[in-house]
Image (cartoon, rainbow, N blue to C red; front, side, top):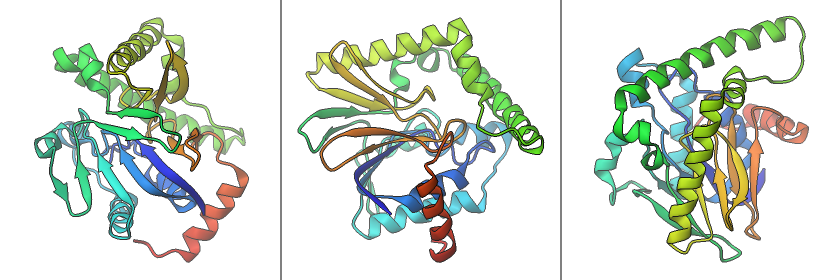
Amino acid sequence: MAEVRSIFLSDIHLGARGCQAHQLLDFLRVYDSEQMFLLGDIIDFWAMSNRGIYWSAQMNTFVQKVLKRARHGTRIVFVPGNHDEALREYVGSTFGDIAVHGEYVHTAADGRRYLLLHGDEFDVVTKYHRWLAVLGDHTYAFLVRLNMMLSWARRTLGVSGYWSLASYAKRKVKTAVNFISDFEECVVRSVKDRGLDGVICGHIHSATIKRIDEVLYLNCGDWVDSCTAIVEHFDGRMELVEWGARPPPAAQAEAARASVMEPSA
């Protein structure tokens, strides 16, 4: 198992049919950490409200694993997002061993300070035009379902590799590209004004690590389409793990062994 100092996850969307909980479980069988930060949209109340409740055994296992890690000493911090905004009422509370924060300042091993948040507060559409955000959510869900069928067809035809229709659309549609750029700049501007070194967020399902105007910007991505996470190593180095696209062969083998040997909870 790969030991890291911190794991940062966002946009898991438990309760949505597109959630790739099985991929996330494989990831957690390989990566263990002293701290875990859940940066919003972990539970998708929007999907369960608009498209019916869907809760798989893998989703339940993920929740059990997080609770188990918390009981065994892993520090868990949960920052709710817009899809699980109902839980923002509990900011400042602790559920068992999981602390709920509106935002959080994380000091990495190298002394750099990062603002941790979901990011929807910098999304004008989500903040002021909820109906449009819900429409966009339905469109994205349709693309994810269509991508599942395309992935099945690619596997049937023996086409190797992973290709994401939703990611392709975001890269090619100018409006989406501009939205992502504007979002990143707004987040970075706020972080710079607060005198912090970087930010780790989610919300826009666009995983990256890059420097913008002297601020280190990190986005965890999601576990619906890209299956990505940020991990912090013990020297403070941040790494983007692209599990869904190309999990390392050694990590795949480790996950396979762990899935056989490890208890379900």
